[in-house]
Length: 239
Image (cartoon, rainbow, N blue to C red; front, top):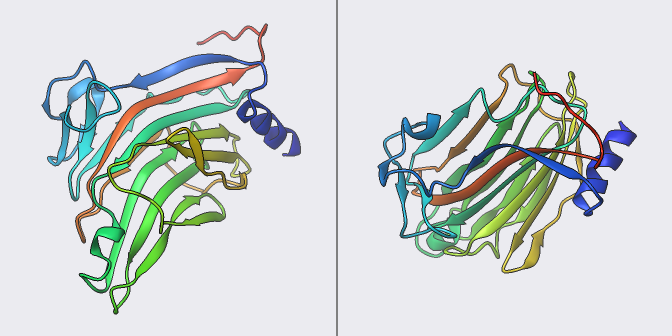
């Protein structure tokens, strides 16, 4: 276990490694409009491809209550090396928009829910926030595995792109790990401790994004990448 965590931290620190890109989605080559069925994605009606809000080109807009799911092909069974999952997200509305205006709200967005190659390897980044009965802000940005790391969302701005890096060490039990860094405007926004132990979940090889609608919390997603990281000079045969 210590070796797996050390290797993940080594990769995150920029040590010499070769990245084998496995899955990418930048949305630029997709048709504007309904996302469901494009490029193998399964999505609800509120998920649309558009160019009004993007890092560059096009991005996915998840309107209130919308979800987008990718099944079966975001990971291989390769577990000898760490997996990197990266993406950009931007909130168009979050709990801060309701402070002092609307009481007793509860928002929960998934960005994203990740299930690895084995059925014991789920981790989520969750925006869990809202307002109290007196319309004050409560909530956190959370990384959830077997345990949870939290950051207050008091400074999570809308209409600002955030970049997320997740490095997973998957294992055939729930003893894997995930290391997360969130940056924005060139600086580190959040760098929580490594989560040791992922959630036990029966599903595999799945990535999902979800925007809440109680109340509305639309968000945009761009530049999704999954790749595995191995020391330079190694040879891996994909079967």
